[in-house]
Amino acid sequence: MSFDNSRFPFNPANDFCGVVMQQGRVQLDSDWNEWLAELSRRIQAGTLDTLGRAAYPATTPYAFQITASSPGGTNTVTIGPGRMYVDGLLAENHGDPQSAQWDPALAEMSGSPQPPPATDTAAIDYTKQPYMPADTKPPGNGPFLAYLDVWIRPVTYLEYPDLVDKAVGVDATARLQTAWQVKLFDLANSPGTTCNSNIPGWPPPPSAGLLTTGTVPTPPSGPCCLTSGAAYTGMENQFYRVEIHQPGSPVTGATPPSPLAARTATFKWSRDNASAMTAVTSIANVQNSLGNPASQLAAQSLGRDQVLGFAPGNWIEILDDNLEFDGQPGELHQIDTVDVAAKTITLATTLGSHFAPGDTDPKVHTRIQRWDQSGQVYEEDGTTVWWDLDTQGGDIPVPPAGTALMLENGIIVSFDLDQAIKPG
Image 1 (tube, rainbow, N blue to C red):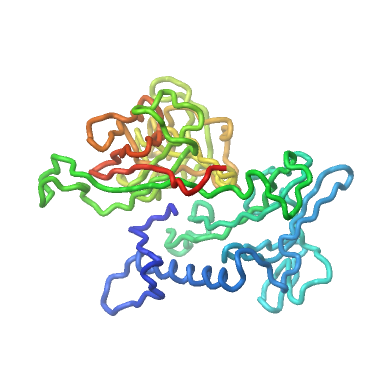
Image 2: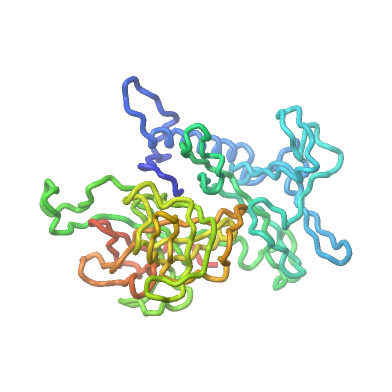
């Protein structure tokens, strides 16, 4: 979750069930976020234990009911309104807002009011799902297995501007949102499939990726270190985030090839939980400081200050809701120059075809996010160069198991695979 937080201390093994405020103490974001995590897990676990992994209630009998038809020869799939519980998470299709009725039980307008209507009148088209990339259409002619994918996503003021309080002009909080998608799994290569069939490739296996973090002494540790040979030598308490950028397989050799082979896994990292973000309002084609073609971004803000802002040399990721909901990473680019007065950021290169020049669509919330990798990336010994970001690209190839890489200030990371999980 890319929020501006100090840390997330929640651990279900502690069996904590609440946070108690004490008088005269300083208020910390970590305490109240742990309370939210404790409460959320209690609700999810209780729902899972009571209802099972997937269930819909009798109060919303049309919940996620899939109806396929071909009016006028055009394939159409609709999704019924209502609530469904998946792994204890509540997914709700609110239905067509034009068909909403007053629900006296919940005191709100609803596509699935109480008592339930005799027929479904508020189903939505497959292409109108609220958390599906724009213009997504059912692929091919089927047959398909329809399934419901549910997850929790972070929402900041960039995705929901109303989080900026009108009275104070800043975002005091962020939100967690339960998102869902009805997806179609193509069964064209599995003729005769029924609900009792074993389908090749279904269900998709979970990720087998493992991340290990640690610290190593990094002499010289500097005059501010109280102990010689200290491991973490940073001067502040940072909340580091390591995230896979491109999925795939790790590098197999002692050094990564350049350019990287297709489907090579890469990662990126941030020392501020990747919380240095801002909206992009327009994109223009310009020339960078060397006279080469580049993209220029008009930004809503250049950051809070010199530490939490955007500066030449930074690596940033540009993305939008369509990429996020499609499960795709954004584009990584290096900043060439920053114009503080005009609030523009000129990149060292041009953006891909996904980001066309002109004003950005406010409905898809185009935004940039700062990542803090830079320069040469070293192995654990601090001298062996693994990757050079300035000449080889902004995301770092995942090394083979047993090879640890240095982030900064003595922090190391290594990657491996859980051998108990079989690939799909």
